[in-house]
Image (cartoon, rainbow, N blue to C red):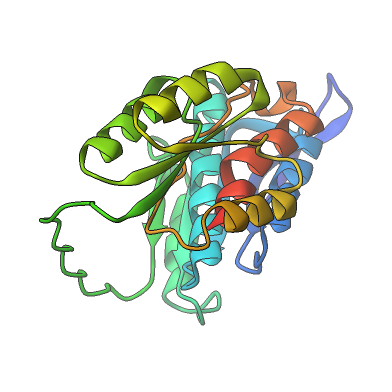
Length: 253
């Protein structure tokens, strides 16, 4: 989208970038975001325009991927903001290509006219009808629930609240938190399960299946953060966050 020459670094500095993520179909595809943008360090000039093309998938995994791409773009927008670099996402329909409807929008987001627009996710699909709200009245008696990251904080409170509503709760957390997990499960007359998310999910799923052949409620409370900028984040830190916060959610579900 046009380049200029940076005399200080003796490299070309790009003025606009379009990244096509519409083909992302599996969680491992998200690694391409890290690889591509990490390699552009120092090549994005001031007032640069970044547009990421994504698709609105229908399956749970496709929806998760779409949300991950949007979250990545918002994070990148905050990181690049001081340099006047904008990052936005255009979400195309499941069967859409870059057609006449998308091209004018793409052109706008690559232009100077969107100088103060960043971190936005713009859907270009047809508006879907709103789903009816579920009927929430009734007891949880007889229901079985699994809560990850249960030993402390929000997960601890969720376990106690579900138990108060009559659910039988399986509390899942790391081995390091065994004592707290055991105490909680005894207090609410539930069960506990020791596992480290992000490692061997297939084995974990087998453990869950043995302990509870069926589940009515699944709360993905566990998560980790590695609060670094994109260029300060190592490849391992990227993998760890995606493995725990996204891949584990998909695999267990």
